[in-house]
Length: 172
Image 1: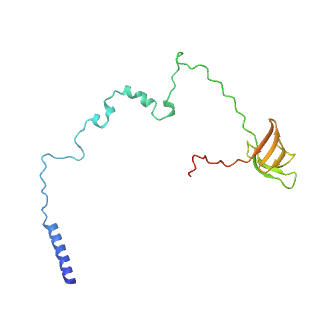
Image 2 (image 1 turned 120 degrees about the vertical axis):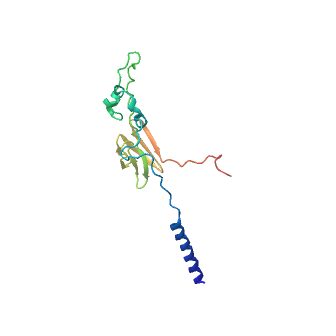
Image 3 (image 1 turned 90 degrees about the vertical axis):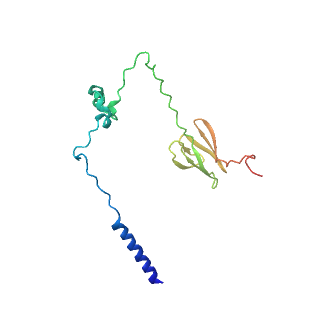
């Protein structure tokens, strides 16, 4: 069985090589005109460069101010009828919210205190009842709330309550 496989393989190789050696060679025709590699057929300059046919004075502004440079974009003087009226005054700067944020409360030992974060810088500190935290003074604390007094009067801070889902969105 092995002998038949080897014989078949040898026959296939022999036929393949025979086809390579016996393949007809393409005939080369004699050139009718001598071809010079150094001098290819002349092409028109406008086919290679469409700008070659333009007069140099048309292209002068492009060469004077090359594209893609900041100096290329010149601002033209505005006409009186196109001139903008006086610009709007700057808006009044809004003062940042300096209301402290309640981070935690301590009820025992009495009098207790609260962990507060400053609204502007985020600085945190423990403040006992009666002490000051910036312009605010801690008056009292309870489970999840703290009462402060400051420049705007009394302020009661509480922990955020989890939002209850709407009855419509809850599937029965």
